[in-house]
Image (cartoon, rainbow, N blue to C red; front, side, top):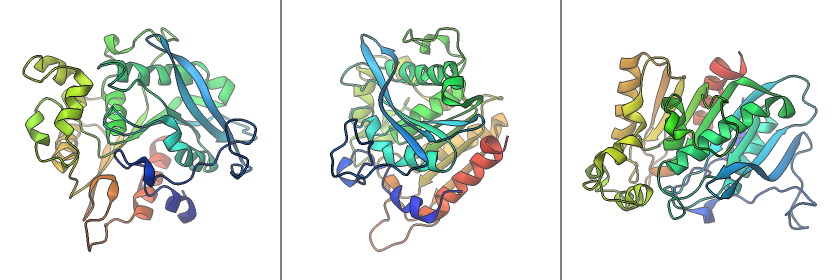
Length: 317
């Protein structure tokens, strides 16, 4: 279980595109850390800018954290940042992966090509590359290749949901490395990710101009190529046999409507996919409380529920 002290450091990690709210990063002395920054907890190994393969003609990097002195294979968690597929970077999630490693997981925060660099399906191809990289290097990192989790918030939640529902879509594998290695994950943690991009009108009231961000992801208006927009909608890929998922979404989310996760919950239920759906009362995007209110469940309770979910399906396997 994640301690209350660690939870407090994770409160703002899933902000949509507000890097100024992120907590100070804890880096490894001797790499790219400033001398004044403290070292990571002594029980955690932290690696920076690990090259995991290629996305087009560029290297794809990851931040990596894992428990020191591992004696047996542990579950692996791959984290995907938010930012509307246009902003964000893997280093945003250093506090999260450090906390996860501190609690016995291998964790990596993954960069993926943003929409101003490459259009869909480049983003999911890079995420699938990350799964193949981790599975192919499981022995090196003492990871159990049969216990890999995709965890993301907002746009990263969308990509995590894609990994959970698109394991058998071969054209999304890409050619970034490790051909023939499975890109299937065994569990998904989806914090308020958009799952149906096939109706841009669903986002017309978004405070974050989601229709523009989605169009940037695909590179063309919906009317020009509706099948392309549908191809990036994990809701439309749900089927029996998909991995267990936990979905957490605020009831006052002004970026990604709660209806997105309600529909996802319904589709997973109909397909018989084991999952848990938590609606956070009084919560805007990033679990930010609406003015004058308190979110329910609390941040601590949300992370407790995620811990229980992972213990049930992954850590306790």
